[in-house]
Length: 411
Image (cartoon, rainbow, N blue to C red; front, top):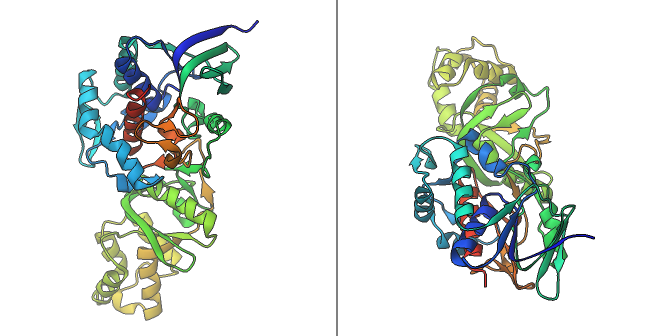
């Protein structure tokens, strides 16, 4: 006979949002029995790999306008409940001091993601939370007095249920999208989901793939099928054997994939010289006179391999002088350098994505409590919601804030 356990609150998912929800639930209601379940063999897998193992805990300035998915006003309402100063103070009280880097990202002073996970687990223990893993939840549902969760390990019944199951990114960590099935079973909608903050693929024959290892600042632009400029990101870009990665590419990826699903002709372009417009570069090359165009581009801090690729791409002689370029040749080179169209063939998928775009819209929740509008007693936080931000700690801040709101709002 299957064993049945009883408790007041079950939190499913011990990632950033789930840990936060459990900690604050325990602190807010110290007399309640709260159980935190996770299917992974190692707690906090996503936290441990974040920021190259350093964990970018948050950003110095988290702007709600930089998030996508649900409405900015709803996202802002949650973020205001637990802002960056409160996050910094929270971790400091746990013994994890944060430092600000030039990019605005906040990391532990120890540069150790393990310190972040260990501090959260200590806080869970101090809040008298029972954390049980690996206990994968296979099904959820309602009872006459609340909810149940089930798995190969048995069945647990509770008065209130928190789903912090994550999305689909980094599935090895346990976030394989099962949580979306759970929320649908309670009558919630899930907007179209797709990888976000994900590297993009180019054909193996694409000349950019031959630049593997080169990192430089660029501007990546998204255009509609009519050529209209939609959004752009200027940041470090990494050329790889499969295509493109780096902050600029990761940030624009969700907008590109979203636009592509609605406008098949949408495309990306890259400006290898982000400080220059097409007109700037055109005038500067015209002013070279009998000087080397290649040396000029090298002087613009472009790697030699990249300059050579641009010349080959435009079918130009490497030794050509400024005054030897035909007008059509000059314009072709200028366009290649400042608005080269990228032949994107796909993306690296959820395995390499840092976050999932899509999820439960915030208008289906009472964002004051992150409680389901159609199923009282059910709470959602973290990546299962239709909220995703850029790189730099924005998605962690959403996890901390939404988890805090849930933990302090249980009835």
